[in-house]
Image (tube, rainbow, N blue to C red; front, side, top):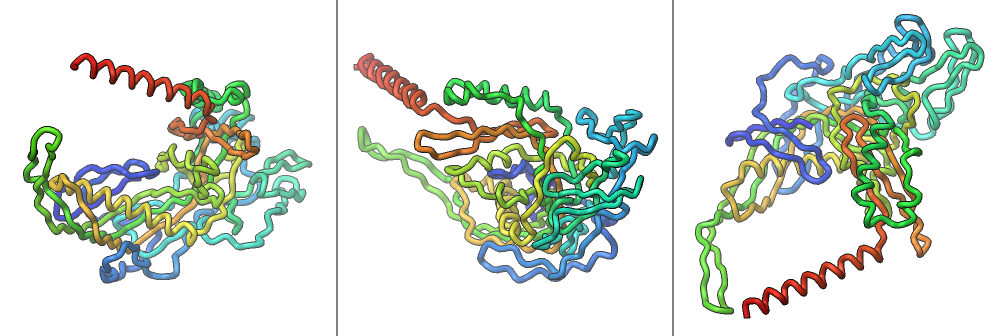
Length: 446
């Protein structure tokens, strides 16, 4: 998620916090021709700063919708060489593969992108519009090859095979139920590669793993799934004010057991004022995955495998989903705005931290005002290999563990059920050994 910022201090590289992927900071480039749909509205005047943490509402209030399904047709998608509809993803190349003539090709690159410097107002990809409650999930298509009518249940898949001519029919146009995103990032890791990553991850934790888990663990049932995300570009301006301390002197007073270390520091009022451009901020768009209470579930695991290389994303094509499962988006932009605001503020603090090295005793920010003048929202399907294990504890309480693998980078993280008695026993032994060693050291110097 590249970020660029500038203020009256030289830019310094920074890194994202918490679940955020690392960010790179650089001085802004000169304005260039916008790659966003033209004409763009003129940037409005920023809202007056206030001494609270907030993001000023963007202008205009009505988002501009950009169609990302132009030219897409529901029905038969054929191989450009032989006309076959038997098309799958080749994860080794990330391209679509014809099973008949073995031709490979790629869908067009993500068209909803551009220079964040030129972003003004609020823009939405057509797949990021609000989901309409009650939209039918069972759709009927007329096969363009033989004329038969074929039913597609979008709760289960976005493809179905014609029962007469055997052509594969795909749902490619956006429908207002969250099933079709703006872009998709194809899998690049095969199932075998994901299995090796999961086995290596679990292997390092087998000693403390629950015996039942060790007995039942197998990667044969891992699944490749496209998870729904919202990808956001933000153009903003940050104003921060607070106080920082710089260490002047450190000294010791008293003697013997009454020795104390004291510090003298200078206190400064400080402020920062800079532009902040955030490119491809990625947040989950599933309400179930957004529930991340670690005492109840391990959904937070999914965030730890970020970032995804979104520069390799392409316009959505249902053929990329063949052979994998997918989860429909059910969270609208309004429900995700507070999360985007919180992560944007975290990035702003990280950017400011890189300019406050002089204040080695710490900085306390008393106000942070982040004024958004432009933002772009689009929906994406991103690839994840998932291993899941349902632990049933002695009390009957159930807990679902995950091991997740980024389907492109291979980044792996997970949760493994722990054998508590073994963990307690090992901890007790370590404490006893530590006490014995400590006593021996004391006796040695008496």
